Length: 287
Length: 147
Image (cartoon, rainbow over all chains, first blue to last red; front, side):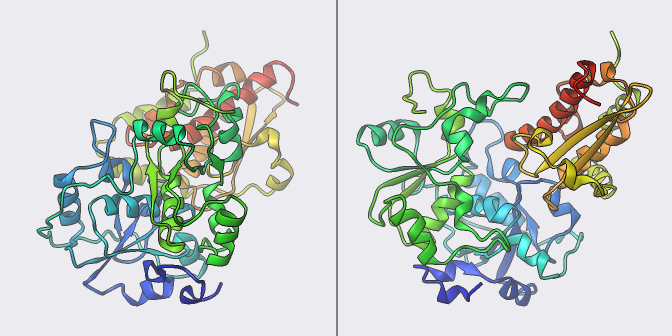
């Protein structure tokens, strides 16, 4: 894979290489954060000094379906020993799917000094780099966060309904089987947390993982991403775009790609996603 | 009514006594560490044996033994699928060698009992899919669809 700076991204600084991470393991201004789909993975071995941020326990409100609030975010940042000046580098399994989700949640609180380690765990492991089971401890910090600001990058169901009425672009980043609704109805298996299958009317199906190279988990160069999103699916940088999946985690990966790698200015993530839409009484559905 | 497998019952009793989340994690990882690739796995990676909804690429197949019990085999394609590896080792150790009637009585909330309440919905679906596939194989064996 080519150097990050040569891939034509609008904001190449949002990515760091595994080598960069390896050279900053002892950098006090850098906090490496692992976020995974598999909650056991961190404990089997992680990058030395990396702290675990688990989305179910650390990023979600533990009662309501929502993300943590200002107080919760300040507490999280204090626990991981981060200040407003700390560069937070996310990485994880599944081609950085959950790393991008954590990155997106951090942006709700305006922590701009955040990056993704290109290739995630897969690339780090393939390169034979060190993993440890030693869990780091940090001196607690006093982190002051602004109130969570959902307006710019998050969207709610009523806004999505208006979006549909105006025939504005939507991206469904789930698998084709989820998009069509066929997967919801397989016998003997649990449904996907929704009573109805299908997709939001007008949504284009661009599975999130098409943005990464499967061999090492790195992001594809801008030329290939533009071909996918612009040429093949007619999504333009100035468009008002809503991305969704099942609960908003895979779509945060696509949000990251469109916003940070291709420079789209108006992409929002609908984290209610199909588990909300597929259960909403009277919501329009297309199959 | 047949009870579900005794070894599984004993294991669930053990899980219910764990005093902390970290203890549960360590326990599960000790199971995942025992996962071994099956040498015959390639021939069995068929659509019929693939677990839907599981992000770790899990395959399950079963062979009926002369005494009518079932021996299960598992493949996990994702090397980072630690939870899937742990569950398949647990199922192999506690369910393989049991008769299909007992296997069908495995509780529906098995995944919850083993992994606890902090499991995400997607993960729960994938892991529950593995258990459902095991039960499907048991059902097939009773209907003579399994050799």
